Structure formats: C-alpha cells, structure tokens
Length: 76
View 1 (tube, rainbow, N blue to C red):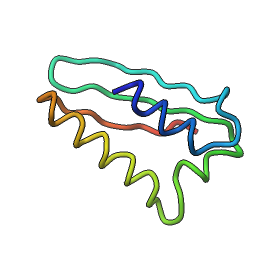
View 2 (spheres, rainbow, N blue to C red):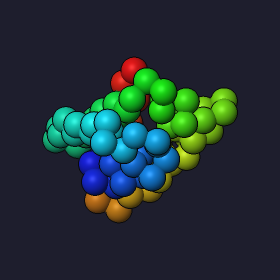
View 3 (cartoon, one colour):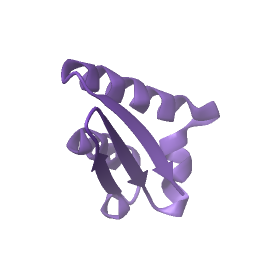
View 4 (cartoon, rainbow, N blue to C red):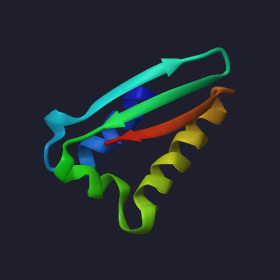
C-alpha cells in the first residue's frame, strides 16, 4: 500500500523528492501518512478534496483485496 500511495503522489506533485510516505501497520488496520512539500499540498488535496477522495478510494479498493483496512492521513 505504501508503494501505491507513493507512486500516485509522486506523479501528481512538482517536487517528487519531497514526498514522504510512512505506514503504521496494525493487526487489521494500517494508517498511511503522506507528507509533501507545502506548495504541492493543494495538488494532493485537489478542488474540494476530490483528488484526496480519489486516492482514498483507490487505497480502499486495494486494501479490500488484501482483507485489510487502510486509512490515508495527509500531513501538512
């Protein structure tokens, strides 16, 4: 899951070297923390949060296949 989010985020931002993804794995749930450069934060969130919602939808679909639950946290 971490690699998937990192790949998507790097494709969206202007400074891919500043993309940081940390995965905190639990028994059933994993929390994925995404942080990007300040100027790229708007590109990750998108208008009215649409891009962030789309990334979370992809993450949910991929997690369902693994019978786990994943939550995406976007760190400012």
